[in-house]
Length: 85
Image (cartoon, rainbow, N blue to C red):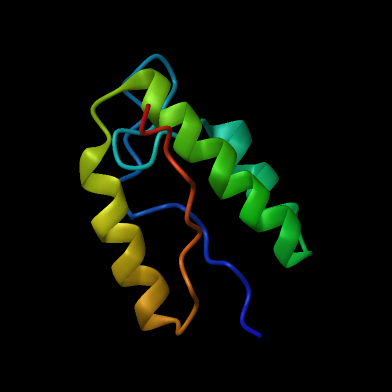
């Protein structure tokens, strides 16, 4: 099974208080993701990042870009259940 790809969507502009405009990762988070070897760890990281994006706001563009990246690499994208209450 291919590894979960990096949440990076090739924008890499850290202009939101140290968070990337494209994916919301900080430089430290980007380095941490590269060190994750197990797929479950990578999936958990992406889930955490999605929650971070929700808190920060203005990351609605990320989902479609990341889904395309996953499709290209033939990997099922990480899905996070949203509270519909």
